[in-house]
Image 1 (tube, one colour):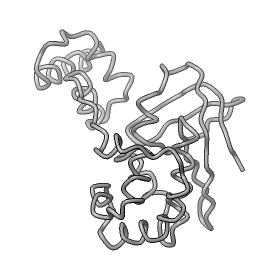
Image 2: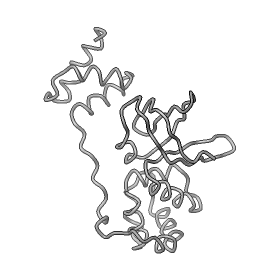
Image 3: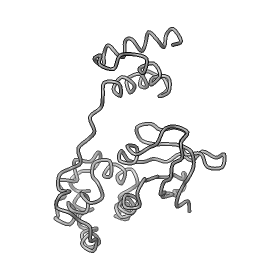
Image 4: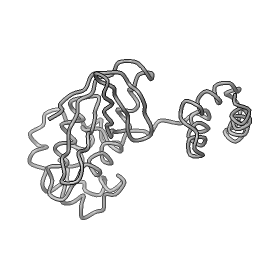
Length: 199
């Protein structure tokens, strides 16, 4: 089993990244928290990983901290809960927040994660409550869901250009050549003009 990866960051998008190790690129699905800690493209990165093996596929999941990886493994140990739900929960909550909600029987709070309905949330709470009560680093300060980072107009413009088919590198280069204090729509229009002219 692939337990960790250390290599150079080749690529990242909104849900995954690619790490090159010894000439081989490993694609890892990951969380927003891990994506927020990524270095620049080409720089070294270290990840804790979990390899999910199915009959028709092998999927690798990467995390910047061992706490996040252990929370992921705990979530997917629940009957009927797969890696997709594990990632969705960890994109919405920190491990401590998850443990706090589960330990306090707050299934409703878990439903704010994408794809988690009340019945699934109740099953997660029921099956994990005893395990969570043995974890010693729950903090009441983590009760509130983590704030989602505010996107700058530049980030929004890059995302919009990527949705139009441009690569992240092309979009970032074009937006980087324009005044950052412009509204998002204006940034996109000017970036499109630059891209049409080949920058």
